[in-house]
Length: 510
Image (cartoon, rainbow, N blue to C red):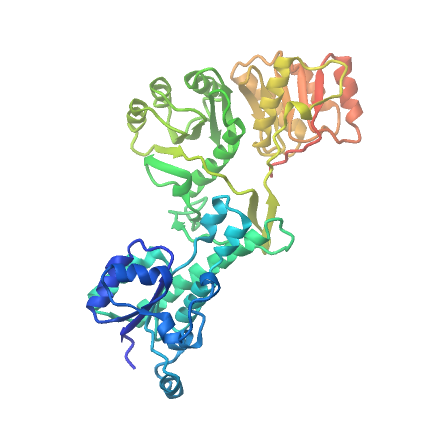
């Protein structure tokens, strides 16, 4: 038999009617018999196109409030029969089953219903049964049937049948089958993940239907891909394509700045996933200036992010710096024009959407999955363990430092004063090395650490860290505690007039 099939009939049962009208009219123009049900049937009639109700084929009405419409041997027999199988052809004649050559389905919007915050009853009703069954049957029998499984494929399908006058090649049918199983597998993964939201069943189902090939991975000799809906998170206003490393840095920047959502104007500059500058001020311009002062050397080629609209004054300062990406909730028109002055500079508007609450990373021959660290240390979490308590201003700085520390690679130490990042030690193999790095970095940029505060992502195993901090001028410390030798660090602080609070929460970031 020829690999190209000329369709004579089509079954249409869709949720979304967007873009369906031209298809219906083209099918009618080509003399293709159309079968349909319910709302889709009414839509087709409203186009002035003749349609045969599925009930006329099955001699069975739609029942259970529309839950059962197409689930019938005369429907699935028409889809699953093998046209080159004499027995199948004979059975179609014996049971008066019509041959169905095209199946067009668009499933109930399960994911959108979950995302809308609908009730469980409404969500369950959006689990498509008939539609998913039609997709699987039609895609399985791609040798004879064309399956269009999503509104996203309507336009391409219309183009193909228009060019071929109703004829569709085997290669196209098989490609549409692959698309169909992509739709069905993604749909079932979303349903499973909804039912398994507490991860009681230790099974990992990840499905991303939006994929993008990147120029390369971390390095030019590595292939790289991004699977996710970038456009749902950002409006890209300007600049070159984002690289693998850009995306990792943008992820780090977004997660860090989420700690300061709704707070006073805050600006951060990141390099290799770590903040090298961060400040909170009364204006975003001053926040940027003071963030840049934290490490103007590392800021070169960095990722910039703001929690407030970027204005002209801030844009003029940013424009002096070579940076890869700028992220903000909005920009004034004048600011945007200034920042577009560098053709490769990537400009993003961050949209207000909820991020996943789980993290997944490859490990060995599998994957590690964990709950995201959504705990942000707050005033009520602080347990003062020293004779000297931190002042109100120190408490604000301690919590500010803790937020930065949480998003900096372990082992890490962070110094802040007046809601400005002065220095940090990042990704060191010992906490002492992280502290020494912080001290040296602060000195290299002429910061006075007298009166500054220190945050540590984990406990101090020995009192050497608080001693080094004291010698540098640190007057208040925040750490999770939990060492069997905590008392040694407490004793040193008490002997030297340093305030120390413990949170009970470790914030490792490996």
